Image (cartoon, rainbow, N blue to C red; front, side, top):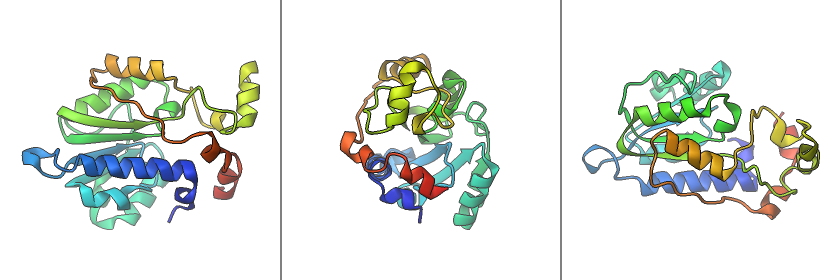
Length: 206
């Protein structure tokens, strides 16, 4: 078990994703379970929870070690886990009913290319489920970055491995440019939940 899933922000995200996939449970071909691709899946932390609500579940990541761990966790589906760049997905057009992109777009250089690829592999009428940090995060999420960020210093938890911090307007614009419509936005956690984990969760994981 990934201990991060016990923390408030990670747990809220996991619950949101599982509930969303369950809600989309009859969105596949002929009204069946959906075919799902997880772009930037890491070690596939959530796949055990969502697999029951999918007819097929695939994942990709640029990190070879993460994909090896994901494939080892699900040996019966190891061929569905691939090392791949999110901007160049190795799947055909219209291959999936749902694409997950969870805490990934803040790590990429060409967000437009990633979202365009997600749209390409989705069937017409398919759904993209995307989560990301908010550029307007409260100070409790990352006090160091909240303060230093105003001086343009790349420090703090939100600076680690991120190429940018998405603002809602930017994400909406990028989604529209990639051809997505019917965009719905919701916040997953508030200031108190994030304040409960701040920096020590990352340190504990390492």
